[in-house]
Length: 93
Image 1 (cartoon, helix red, strand yellow):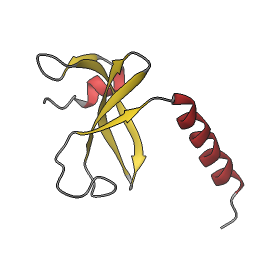
Image 2 (cartoon, one colour):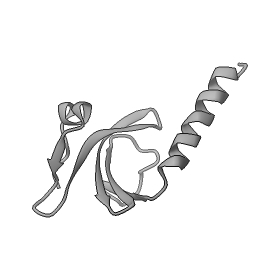
Image 3 (cartoon, helix red, strand yellow):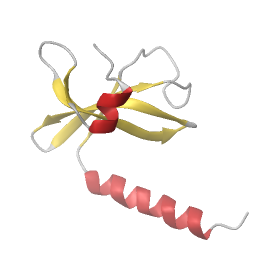
């Protein structure tokens, strides 16, 4: 499987990962201090996200990039992001 480039992720380009898999390139949000190249592959109401994370956390172990994560509720990510924003803006060191 072909990892998308920085430019493809930044422009949300449609990319082919292999002969049968096509999706939208993007940057996966920072985890463990690193952002990651990713491709969102659509399947009905859910998506598979192929992630090439370049740090150990949270993708350490035997799996080799890309790690594939299945998501079906984008609203959960929006709510989680809003919570992170609220907590960090109102946090006292």
